[in-house]
Image 1 (cartoon, one colour):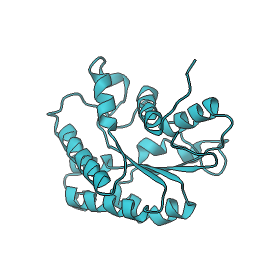
Image 2 (cartoon, rainbow, N blue to C red):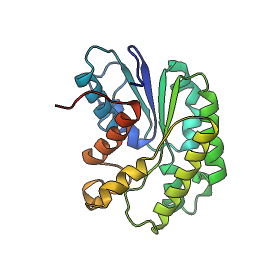
Image 3 (cartoon, helix red, strand yellow):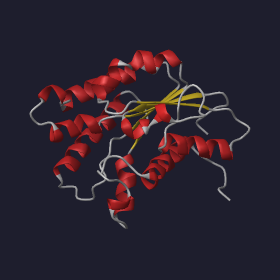
Length: 216
């Protein structure tokens, strides 16, 4: 297992990570939200009750990579994490489609790459730092937003390799599902996953960390 007893594990990102964390009750100092972070915590608590893992949801709805970088020192580094998962990028992409006349909201590829690289550099002392790719729940790879999402995911993969950090291809996980079922059951907007989509993300994370207990 990647995680060790007593680890503080931070999930940094946007609304896909946030999932209403500020409204979640009974989670201690930091709400877990109602998405994949809560599911990961549920699995770890149920299957590794002898360990104490401190999971912290630091997703902020609406964030792009520029905004996440601006709060990195306060929200990530200052919490002294042992493990950080970073999923960011869909808003960098989306604003280019839903706000085409507002270029100040657009994070173009060069800035996206620089932002990710700075996050990795700021996390050099974090024991385990894992990038989670942005994704778009659309099977048609010729869809304009899906094509751009693939481009940004490739950038993240390149930054991860440059910094010798793991990269988890979340888009590939959704593509496997979309080979058999429609994405309509995953999301209302192809960006924000319902519980099935959250489980797909959580499963990829559990696989990455070496989840090694029998489910039954």
